[in-house]
Length: 121
Image (cartoon, rainbow, N blue to C red):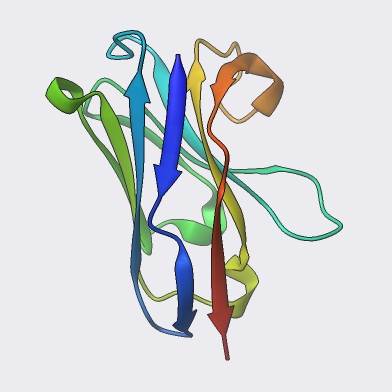
């Protein structure tokens, strides 16, 4: 499975971005698909995950601001980010797999290359 993330950019606080992750090589409809982020000098952090269409998980600090969704027909997953804050600045990675613990990055087998999100105050 190859994952290609896109949609990052630079925005001001309060702005919005929509990240996309396109999967190829295998049908990922039965996989958990997740978004993680990594800020400079910090460990990779779980942001959100989705199984099928309605089973979703979020980092507490992004609940109500970020929405994860997927288009199974297009083999893609999205992260709509609103009310962005400077602390959301990081490289965002999409991941796929069958993790034992949804929030544990080591449980994901497939990773995209990352897309940079920069939020200025």
